[in-house]
Amino acid sequence: MQSQGVVPPAEPEVASFTTFVSTKGSCVDPWRQDLDTTALDKRGLYVDDNPFRLVALGRVYEGSKTVHNVPLGNDQVKVGVEEVQDANARVLIPNEEIWLVGQALNIFFTWPIHLV
Image 1 (tube, rainbow, N blue to C red):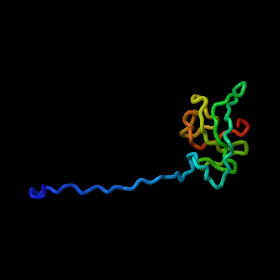
Image 2: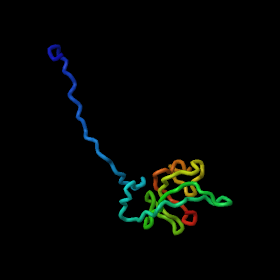
Image 3: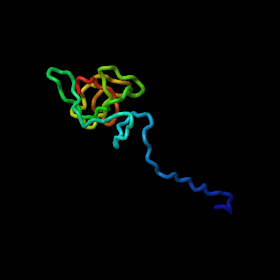
């Protein structure tokens, strides 16, 4: 090919595979190494239908003051859903990306403390 003036393409650089960790704090830490918070054992997350209804199981991150750079209210906690019970249940404090419990798996978001 070189004798005909055609130069073969250079070998592509192969990058090594690296594990990336979220620096935004938006995903649940599977190793629970968030040094600023304490992850409690799995808790039920409820909606205030009459009667209260379990919609997910997740962890509460005590000590957190914000979720996605939004300050938590006095009656709110940071949670990470680990098990969805009702994917179509509405998230009580929705954000731009999450409005149903089924969308919240392994993502941090805000939940009313009285419904944990």
